[in-house]
Length: 263
Image (cartoon, rainbow, N blue to C red):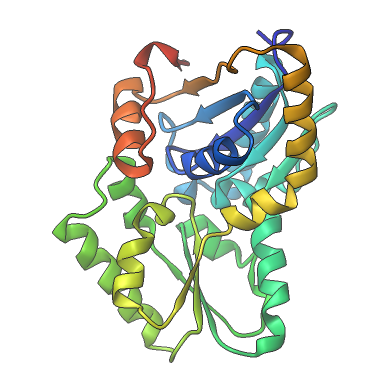
């Protein structure tokens, strides 16, 4: 497979990376994507740093063998370790860099910024250095709802309200950074309860920062073939559950035959 295409790899624990998948396909439809979901493993937000480092490095190497020469780590928890991993002949971009750049740009406003993410992301304090007035809270339970394709139930609304209440204890925030790629699937619910707060999805900044690279990849693929690029999906989890949840949360209709189960 690795000699057939120069894939753009997207790594996420589950379906969260499909938000970035959608963003890439909308602007650069000719880029073939190799998506890797590791939902058969413990949620990254609950894994200790050493174990997570070893897991992410092994997956990046496997994605390289499968044909990905450019890999985007769309998971914030995975980014806590991926930002320090070097893979020979592979360019690795992380959502960490894009989020950090956003926080640096708004630092001069001196307004409180809210940030929610998985346990590992919040515990790492990796974003604290980018902004002096950052209010960070874990929202691990939201990922579990979204991973099951549950995006508008009473339980989801109650969980969102609880997170907002915990954030509000420290005072008002001017914006809320969704530091987990699952959360944008319910950004409308956050906006419903935080009508005067800007809801920030770092995926948009990641797409912008990778613009030149993505343009180059698309140009290469256009010169190779006039056929629509074939995307490949790998998962360590349940292919049928991934297909169902990706459709419910991100409106992506995957062919079950294109999802490869890895063991």
